[in-house]
Length: 493
Image (cartoon, rainbow, N blue to C red; front, side, top):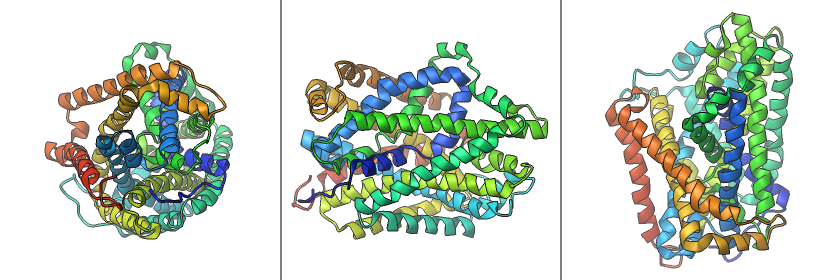
């Protein structure tokens, strides 16, 4: 760890950066869909229960680790016990895997921002996305060439990310003061526009009408915990790194509450923009709304563009606004992931920030070429599924076990309370030691059983082994190797 650690210029910079990391693409295309398929308005009940019982306690845990240990995740866990350093590297490597394909999604957004000015997708948004932009091949075995538009978008993404973070958190702090409020404003514009469209009420009813019978389904509760866990950027090393740049007496609980509730509120707010627009699409096409609501990239790059092209006026303007929103949401999340990796390299080997940033960005760019290929979407889907359903959940489980049963929740809670305005009680101990481990363990077991019953996405088994199981196991193996590697002092951290 560097002798003089960099510091945020103020608490607002830290909070903006943390919120920017948590609020990303998943808020605008994953949460609304997850809410719809899991009970609509009723889903808010398990969602906020999950936020209070797992999301916020885990956020406090990671903020507390960063502030107390004053280092990247591998430093934090090695200070707890030398043999635990690999857990920190595990989260850092998971973050690296994510940036290799998250940047490619940003590349898609750059392309669509350009095409929005002319609504180039026309009446066939699906064909435009899959055939013209992605030039999608027949399967994961057919990588094909690399579409030049996506390659250019990827290059722009990494140049932007490099220049944001290569000078350190001082520049990051200044950037997030602009990039975090902008998408909220843009989402607000989309909400106002959506609510004025015919059919908007039907869309909001579709989004919010509660189906309380869904609350009896355990899968709905697991979905709520999964959404909260992944939406808050937990288990990726980000929050530990960001908190490590705070003074050692910084508040933990208030920062955790502010970050978590801002992320949840943004997700809920974004749903109004998405489903009012889908209601209009259903109204304009005469199709039942249950058949126009899509999930994931299909929602953002097919369904919404289709609705935009049908707007009665200023369609191009709102197309530009929508994809600017996606870009501004994505950029904060991406550079926070990169920052976690860069800080880990600096803390371990004492590498100059400029060099560490270049190494991470260039390596991620090269690996990302796989996901830009004509077969890249298949590999992106596979890797994303495994890193989220197994990698991050397992890392989170390891974190709560370490704090709950090795460090001890009572001394850790006492540290949190010693520097926080809002004190947490013994309930936090039960969440970390019992509730969260059970939920994360159940998520892992449920996902694994699902893989056994049916091959994910209908992909061939060899592709799932390479992009799924081998990738997860490889991360763990490399984590142990990095733990044993010599650091800047000649020994492992």
